[in-house]
Image 1: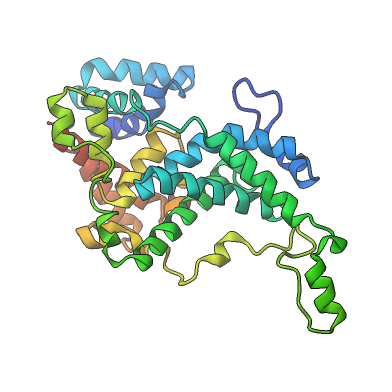
Image 2 (image 1 turned 180 degrees about the horizontal axis):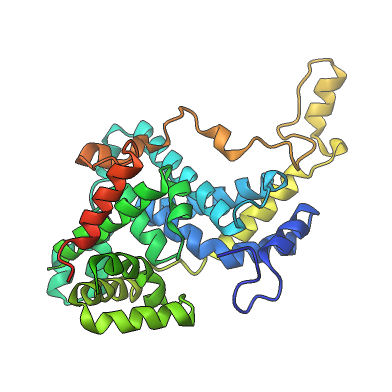
Length: 185
Length: 155
């Protein structure tokens, strides 16, 4: 996805960023409206906790807008924001684990507030089950699948976000998909 | 279709399933699918995932726009907006500063610099779970691995 106006959006992200730099709060509100969902899904994918993900999204937007003057537009605003969000989410996890030694339980295979995958299978909720199983994958695989499937990012963009090469991002994605198919059987 | 074709098609499947693919590429994928059970099975999985995207809290937009505006208002505070206590302290030569920088745009450290200890992937459960690391592999090794992943069970 580029900084051009997204489907149905009359004003491009780039224009909104320019207006935001000039102090236009409405332009920034519009950027929040456009991209909060993607940011939330990234934060949720890393933290696996709803409340933590919401805090992360708030912090990410605040940091992004403060650093707007440094945004050069090499990447789309969306990808840039999602990278900030991913970093914020990792920092949030680290702070949690410092705060509570037992927090490792919080970042275990499945979020505590999620239903048990087995229970979901019994209920026949295949999609929910797939989502729950996705959360059991290692972080880079999980994030690669989520960013590729949900957000439509390229492997180059995913690589930038997970701090790897493009080839490694591709391998993480295919490993994740293969594992998910095995788990779904 | 060869295994290489499956590899290319599989890269397109998420965009195909989500309707993000242009018409030409979409036709290529659609033509491949009837002859390839593996790609169809993978497409099924992707469609299952797309059918239940993580729900975004309805209040999140309001929550974020409000906190962004609050944050910007507080960082826009002009020099005469500092607290009376700070003025008094300055007058007394104590040297108390405002809690926020006076100028904002461009003065805030880049977000990346706030990563305190460098290794952002410390929380990576993969380290605990034995996730294979692909970052150190050469391009050739990655290509081999990818070939293996995209050809397994294909055809």
